[in-house]
Structures are given as structure tokens and as C-alpha cells.
Amino acid sequence: MNIVEKQFKISENNTKMSKEIINGILIFLPLIYILPVISSTLSSVGIDENGAFIATAISTGFACIFAGIIINKPIIQSVGLGMNAFFVYNICNKMGYSPEGALTIIFISSIIFLLFSITNIRKKIILSIPNEIRLAITIGLGAFLIYSGLKSAGLIVEVNNKLSIANYDEIMVILFILGVIVTYVFSMIKKVSKYSIIIGIAFVAVVGYILHLFGINNTPTFTNAKISFASLSKTVFNFDFSVLSNLKTYIVIIVFTLMNVFDTSTGILALHSELGLDSGENDLVIDKKMFLTDSISSIISISLGTTSITTYAETKILCNSDSKTGLSSVTIGILFILSIFLYPIFTIFSGIMLDGQYYYPITSVGVVSVGIMLLSRIKDIERKNAIGVISTVATVITMIIFYSIPDGVGVGIILYVILELLFGKIKEVSKVMIILSVVFVIYFVTLIII
Image 1 (cartoon, rainbow, N blue to C red):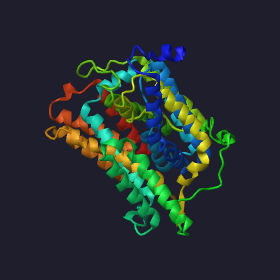
Image 2 (tube, helix red, strand yellow):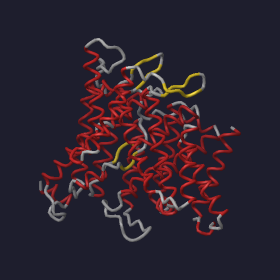
Image 3 (cartoon, rainbow, N blue to C red):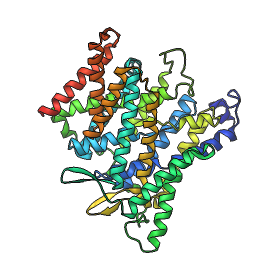
Image 4 (cartoon, rainbow, N blue to C red):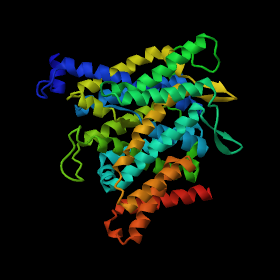
């Protein structure tokens, strides 16, 4: 116990070991949704779901333990939903890369990301992105996740190359809609708001399984799948370096790296006060350890077969619960690793086959709910700032129409720079923003030519 006291400076931080551990246990519960959401999404492009589940659990466990020990702050890090969506829906589905090729792309990107973190490049990029663009990216990502969740739930389907609302009379879709409503209702109740997502997910799982027991088709049920660490052999170092012979790959690597910087920055910037990083306007005082933890953890997570690590917004809940040290994070990390042995229970989150297509009504509740949380940042937009409003609208619309996160971010950044130029404010635009706009112009040209 003296080792723990010394490592986490329990007394110095005016807290108790028991409080830190209990807070970690309580905050772990509403985070469980991460495992089925990430693994089921990755399985939709052919990655072994069992292996993805184990990889996500180990990666999250390592990231939280590593961050807790190195930074000694109550911080939660796990596989990011945004970058996971980018990996699945853009790199694999839209750009046509195989899971192995896509993992190769983000693995190389993670190495560049680590170099950015070691140097001051990552910090300069973060501070050079105007608040309007940060908001636009967050809001756009929220809209994208809502849209993706509606599709994966089966409420929105593609018919004759046109999107249409369908399956609304299917029990699995009805359960999904009810799950979202339940999540929203509980999110409004202060005492249980932090558990709202897991409550909504559990509602769909429990009610769906009861209906299944009564013989109703297309409802959630458990499978005979058992945990097998041998599944990791299908995901660990599952790379295909032949994709490096394609010029487009290098552009995608650059874009994914930038997107990763944006995604991780959103979490850190949103939590700068709680994590003690506030020191004046636009001055992010941060130890490089903060950057090193997620970048090193990302290399490990991708090597295991899942996507990159980011800081979760639930960190705010952990801090508000009066956690003051990394012991809470370590507790959460240990619990995530132990949850591997509960995999048979998590099989209820597996997809439901309908008309030759798998849908995920339970995990889609989590995706849509997180999307709504991000989209709610729209209230922070300064309406009198025309450039910010236009850039945000363009970002959101582009992400939805082209079903692409980088396309939306690229359009938003390019449009922002052009508008600043037209309004005679180009001198106020940082060099980094100009460079980013050029990179995205090259990205769009590459998509058209190659």
C-alpha cells in the first residue's frame, strides 16, 4: 500500500485510496459499451470480432493504466469512436482498402503521430486550429456518428443507390429507437446521467432477449461463441504492406495522421480545466507525457488489431466525481482487461441478419448517443461569426452527403481559409492552417485522379 501511496501521491492530493478505486469502478460501468461497439464495427469489415474484442479490451486497459501511472491524473483513454468510424466507413468501405491494408495505413500513421507528439509539431497544430474549426470538427463528427448509427441499426438503408428510411416496423429497429429515447431520458436525470448510455444499451439487450425467448425473430440473443485468445492471431500484426505501392496510400496516411491529431485534441482541449492544463487564453500548458501516453498506446492498439487511442469525454465525469489521481484510471484499466473473460455475455451485441445484411440495434444506441453528445456542441457556435457558421455547416453537410469524415474536415478547413482571404483577414490565419488547407486540396485531387 505504501508503494501505491507513493506512486500516486494519495495524501499529497488530499484524497483516499478507497475513494479513487471506488470512483474507478463506478465510472467503468458506463464505459462497457466501448467494447461491443468497437468490436462489432470492426467485424463489419471482416476483422475477427472475438479478436477485436480482446484487442480493444487489452488496448483500453493498457492505455488507462499507462496514462494513470505516467501522468497521475484521472484520465480515461480508449479506442476512439471517431477514428474507428473513419477507419471502417472511409478507409475500408469508401476507399476500398482491405482491413489488413487499412491497418497498415494507420500503423504507419501512428508512428508519425508519435513523432509529432515527441516534438512540438502536435502542440503547434492544436494551437493553430481556430476554435471555429475545432467546433466544426466536433459537431460534424457528432452528425456523422448519428448517421452511421441509424444505418447500422437498419433504420436508414440504401435502395437503388438512394437512401431511404426503412425497417421501421421491424422489432429490432423499434427496440433501437426506444433505446435511444431511454438513453436521452436518463441523460436528463442528473444522478444517473453518467450511466445513461449503458442503461439504454442494457434496455435494448434485456428487452430484446426476453422477446427472443418468446420466439420473436430478429431480436438479440446470445451465441455459443467463447473467448479464445487464439483469436488474437487473426488480428495481431495483421498488416499488408503491399498497399504502400499505391500513391493514394501516402495521402491517406497523412490525412489519417491529421485526423488523429484533431480527434485527440478535441478530448484534451475539452478537458483542459479538469486536467489542470489551463494557463491563460490559448495557452495549453501540457507535459509531453500527456501526448506520449495516447500516441504510444495507439501503436500498441493498432498492432493488436484495433484502431487508435484517444482521451474520452467521460474523463470529465471521473474528475467531477472528485477523483484526483491516476489510481482511478489504473482501476478502470484493470477492469477492462478482466472484462475479456465476460466475452460470452457480450455476444448478445452481435449483429442481426436481415435481408442479407447485418445490423446492430444494441451497439447503435451507443453510437447515436455519443453522436448526440458531440452534436450538442452546436450551442457553442458564435452565431455572429459568419465564417465559423458557414465552415461548420459545410463540414457537417459534406460529412453526411459523402459519408466521409476527412472530406468534411477538408472542406471545412479549405472554406475557412478562403473566407478569411475574401474577408481580408488572411493575416489572422496561421501558417499551419494554410498548410492543412493545401494538404486537403492535394487529398481531394488525389481522390479524383487516382
